[in-house]
Image (cartoon, rainbow, N blue to C red; front, side, top):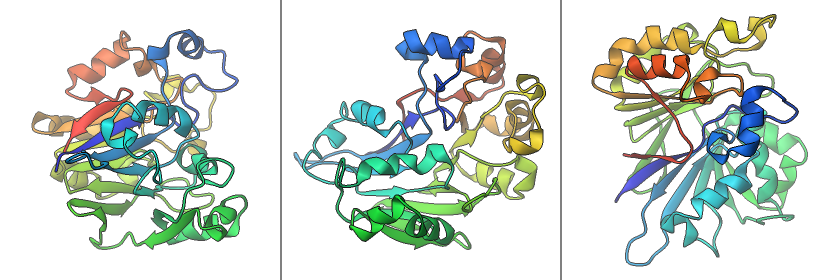
Length: 291
């Protein structure tokens, strides 16, 4: 099996351009498709064999899921699924807007999915089951919630050869808790976390994965003048470079989940060059990562 992870959304929850913003990066993204970054999401694809449709597993359902599907349709493994549920399964990391709000497209008004497996924590399952409009997806059988634990090393297996281990991480939890995931113990995906010091296992987990996709919402404190940092709950890229810089020698560390204000969204910026010179990578839309 040839499994590939596609970064189908490298922006923070609001994407780039962000609704209502007139900042220069947003205005640029409105006229330059290459500057656009969609809401945070990745898709794991197992290539089709002998004409059969490939397997596809989605991690987080962003508000940009329709645009992301347009991109996925260029992949034979996804295009072959025209008469099926759009994915074999979904995992939701938490209940912040950019990570689950696209579920509205999975109901009877749109895709009309049928018993689509949706893995999430018990708190997330309770939140979806108890609140409209998400509860209707459950009651009508569009999605089938499957609660997963975050303690120990229990993994879910959407199909043979794919193993996903949820990992509890500290993050602002108004409605639910938050998880990152390990895919086949090879790729670590942590799109949202409060800060690295609040997660004691951070270096251990990054160190034992060949590839890590990490929260890089903001570059530095200079990006957020006048903001209450306690409301932001994300590590700065400057901190990430110091925390994991020595680990880039024999593994890939890819930064993602960029806020529209983040200067690294401009590949020609000093900040973007600083990241690359430190041995890190910057996620791009539809980056393909072979497992």
